[in-house]
Length: 342
Image 1 (spheres, rainbow, N blue to C red):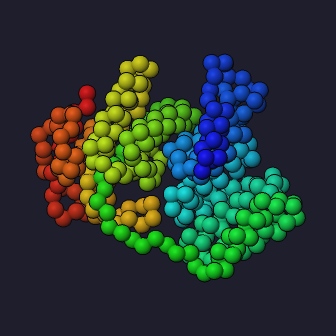
Image 2: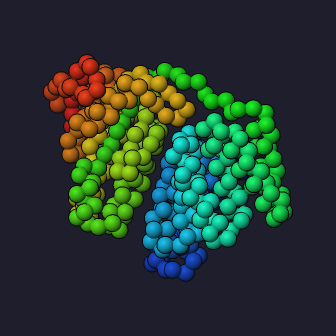
Image 3: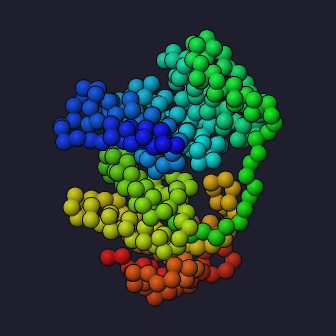
């Protein structure tokens, strides 16, 4: 673990921007192409040490760079990085298409080693989805390439994975009930904003938004469950920390708006409830209610359920008068209030 921590520190230092102007010279942390060569390694290392926020950020930056330069190899790196993050989250169903696309792209640019490495991840995704036969096929194909290329470390790892498949179906963690605080965020009128500023500017805004919010909820102990494109589903163990994170998000956005002229408007919903945990994901009526609370929030609003406020205890911010709302698909009405963050 100490070696991994050292590797994480090294790759983070290598990717820390300097005061030098941006130059396309391939060896500067300010050069998008130079950074793109290091970002896949940052994703790998961050996932290995459990730093999912950094892995997300690196994968997003890699995707933006790939879109900017249009290189098939960069695109392959980007979709594989996204698939690796999704697989780490336990979302094999969404990871598999990204990984499959990455494998196809590496084959197109005639990169057999990279294509074989992706097949190992594809095998992991297929095994997680219960298809051990398909997983074995992917591993055997990867093994043949590693043998041909004399890639001994990769060959050793794939043989271990083949032994695991031979030992029987992967055991999935049992479903469990847990009381958590769920947060849903969403950029207000994101479709209109995209139409107004264009694709490239929107990608820049979205990249900044994602990186900024991820750093905030990670700082407050939030764990990202999923990313919807213009919003997040986040889970917190501490309801007070969830509310503090929401306040921090809105204040950060407002400050950026004042200092730089623009930041997207975000609505946030927070609800504490019992839900069913499936791997890293959560489901059930409590999550559904949290999503509905988020959808009811207005521009720049933090809307919090009574359950979350009671669980949080005394908070630093005042709240509005509570009101009763009806949630689509939820039989019982819910009491909510706005948290005053200004």
